[in-house]
Image (cartoon, rainbow, N blue to C red; front, side):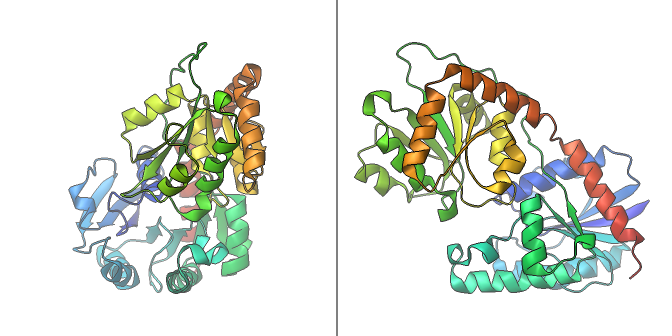
Length: 366
């Protein structure tokens, strides 16, 4: 059996999609007879969470994943030292960062290169630091895994990683089954759902402006989940007089989110940049029709099962929303096509392809 040390220093319960990826990947890897054993180097926060999904022992690092300096030092030194100490044959760092030098071969998963593509979104200094660290990690890694062909192109372009060191492993959805769709009736106002943090590239401002352009008598209710504290979108909602039309929700429970999917006539993702586009897959797997920003990475996920539009234009976005809400046949087609397409994305497949990447890394002579 090959022992793999899994870098869990980033995992604090507050990192969203990267934690979902790691949890579902290792839950599936643990169920597959791939010839691997796993040991995790855990943050202090990780040890306070439900860890039953991890298929191996855990090492308490004493390092906080919320303390940026301690976390960075841990990635730089502690991960590779721990791997050598326990006799690991491979290190997997599943969240963009990892050891910058290591005697033990490293596989790193780089989900996106937002700091390279849109550095202003992170602030000039922070983006520069992240770019420098990611370059070092990519250079040190024996193989790089990324989530999409679009991200792979970015990794090749910005990090100079050769194609023969790069594996594209598309993600999957955590939704267990399609939700029971609530039938809309006469007089029932349609609901649009959108989810995500409030970083500018999520482009929720265009979505809110699009809602304002729809005739009030035909205007749907819009719910946007995912805010923390004072929502930066609230002033725009107030400025446009949309308090009765737009609900800015914070993080919602799984049950609350499922209820929103069941009520939603459509899911809208107006994002201008994604590493993969998991929200598209999440919505399709629940049978919810998807209206998507017209960017290449979201086409990779949605295929012909979504309606694409120029989300930089509130007018175009409003037209797409009105088209979908006004056409029951189109909604049914998108729902059925989405369910069929989502069925091809599974965590079992992610685990198999990731295991293949590990095997490739182990077969390369240092």
